Image (cartoon, rainbow, N blue to C red):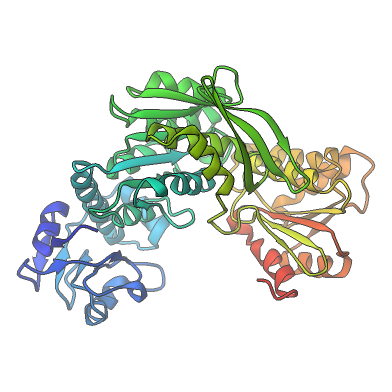
Length: 487
């Protein structure tokens, strides 16, 4: 973060000084985890279900923090912020932090205001903010964009999927006077959420990847999801750039909702940045020709899965807009690696068993992409799909899970292990699709899945592990790799 006094912070967030004269200077990072504080930092006191950050205020200052951002007076120098009236912000803070009195909402609002203050100042001196949203692929694309922009200057991007009301401003506050690019991932659990995040760190470039059925239970329909995802392009200034997926009709239609210049990406012939001659090798690494106008350059991705082609095109469009030559973009895409864990994380054990750990999250679109990747890797090897529940699908949940089970059969996956009763329609769909019998099995929990795999896996098998976070299927992947000393 840029250096600010506690008085400047109080003015930016609408708070008041407590046990401080205002001259204290914050020269370190802004942290809500007291264990990560560095000298000169600012501690954000968030309440939670089990612990309340306010109780750690004095210890945080003893550890080197200059002061505390708090919702009530604490035994330390602080900026105390006013309460927020009851409403949606309060409801979301309860879901995020677990508090019940609204103090979390007040602190989160102050954190957002501080981030907006810092980003606004940095934008005046050349900071470019890039925002990425979509139903799937946000984190992988954010990681690709960061890797393409880093050679152009210092770049800040969130670790993993730090993309909500807490992670978004926290990431923005990692930027300082040296930062040239701030790459942010924007998620939503309801209408208005992306608009609110975009207001915290106003983007100049906005990327919309796709509109799927993730969280359709909360939005009501794909059209409802599209309306919310499109809040990102609505937030762009007239001099900005909207990068839109030309292969997704709901995304392509967002061109009419923005004042910014539109750059279309995809395999469609009318895409401004497109992929031609897409092909996969035996390890599911995609190669393609990156084409812009009359120029083209070859790309071979190190990431696993054909679905990364669209992510790569979006990242390429951002880098091209910021002045990177096409040949350099292609070379950097070919060198880019996976940075976030549990997203098509491929590890091969000493006995040849390959584990595809894609257990961070799941929706019907990403589940289909993962199964197709598994199928492309296993023409001569035995394939296993260990799948769990896809959350927040509402009334479509049963049919969506059923369809995934049937797809596993159609793709000739050898064995399907469905984990948990909530995902049972996957097993039923697979069992009714063809002549499957023991090829599909329903197990009650991760322990049962691990026991089954330990008993039946053979050398050189390939195992895909995927589900929504609530299923915690990473325990299965971790157990398979711990046996080989690789976890």
